[in-house]
Length: 371
Image (tube, rainbow, N blue to C red; front, top):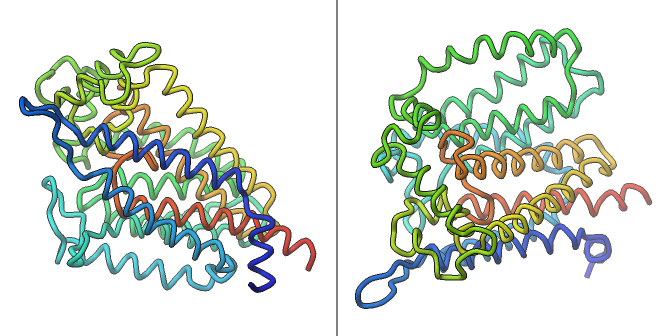
């Protein structure tokens, strides 16, 4: 074993690794329940949890690679990976596979690959590379330049259409920009103009996206149509009460009233079976998980590593906030999954690789200190 390998084992962030594996395990267990549905002849089970476990093992392999590979090399790969992800996004409307009415995947034979997940990694790398240069808050030229770069993959993703993933890319970049800081006059101008210009985005939305916003404002207007997802999710979580109905004992999920229970609304299954207490425990684990990532960003010994960890923090923070708000009916349904809980092969691999990058940054702060 080489010197750097021993250093990894000595200074790896075991708290972050343990929290990641614990949340992942809870997600697989929850998917086992979400994969089942009751029939007259018994209980049938879809293989979602088995696929999630397989993708998790692949992702852990990627996480190990990201831990042992010096993250400083990623700075030189940022632009090539960025343009590669853009190229893959361009291939989606040309050669992509349509699932659930949207063309977002590339069929690679033995699995379907979602380029928008790769775009999130490339956006993280290029954002950290660009924003780690210099220490002064961004002026208008710097802000516009970075934003234009981020709009390339985000625009291609939104055109698929995949508003949720496109917003994820923009919010990741937005978090990095706030982490870098803005000049006071830039911040004041944006604070005034963005709320005024935001309503104009309504005219660029698809009809189904507009309907989702209207449904968010009044779910009861179409309880059997566009409002069905939110209402059934609220019923499932509310029926769990304080302690839940018990594992595999949820009625909304097991009797197939709850739609998309293995993807966007997986946490509704969790809430029905484990109740308010279980949701508080899950939320607490996510808070500790995010705290470990933020702590790594603060303690990193170089700016690129700090921005990498900060980008991963915002990547997970926005997904947790929006998915849980969406399931509770506090935000419109935009198709953003809950990390490690919702089913998704490409997303699982990306999530675990990003955790590997954070642990890499965390470990190598000791290497820099001694060098």
